[in-house]
Image (cartoon, rainbow, N blue to C red; front, side):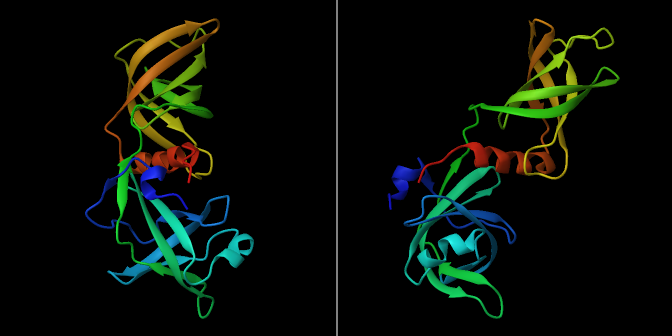
Amino acid sequence: MEEMEEIFELQESEGIYIDIGTQVYIDIDGVDFTVTSIFIGLLKDEFLIVTLPRRFRSVKNKLYPGSKMVVKYLYDGCVFAFQTSVIELITNPIRTLAIEYPKIVQQRELRIVKRNNVVIPGRVEAKKTEFPIVIFDISKRGCRFTYHDVKNINMLKEGDLLRVYCRLPGIANEIGAMAIVRNVKREQKQISVGTRFQDITKGFLNPLMHFLFSIEGYER
């Protein structure tokens, strides 16, 4: 398994920060795909408890006392990661995995300026009207979307305030945020608009960060 410094360009954290119910991403030594679990609890300096991972049957033979893994998760807009190993696989009375308490936890902020090419349907509320959009570029700071140039929609211009709504893949509820228009381009019969998010709430940021993390393509 690669060393942590080769996995992320991370800085050492002062401790482990994680909420019960947080989804964790686990890279198991000898397994060529990432599995997910839910964090249940911990005893400081002793162990952490997570649920048995999804696709458990596919990785069961790799989960035994002493098997190595890297655990990653999101907290407050940062990626935390640590190396650990299995203490015990528990199937009764509940199905959980006990893993060693990490000696070192490292963290990094998701790249703020990186944009991600996506195709996400959404809508915008602006100038006392609402119209459908397609988001094709999104990051923690803003997004770019297109909409059809039709007569009943006044063209957006730099400095306009609007509210962007979208439904991210894998997230049940629609999320929305205020944004300010930074630039506008006409591309044939469509208008392309670049925006910067304003006053982002946790209700918007948390699912967005999970989505960005899922498409970042981090390598083990």
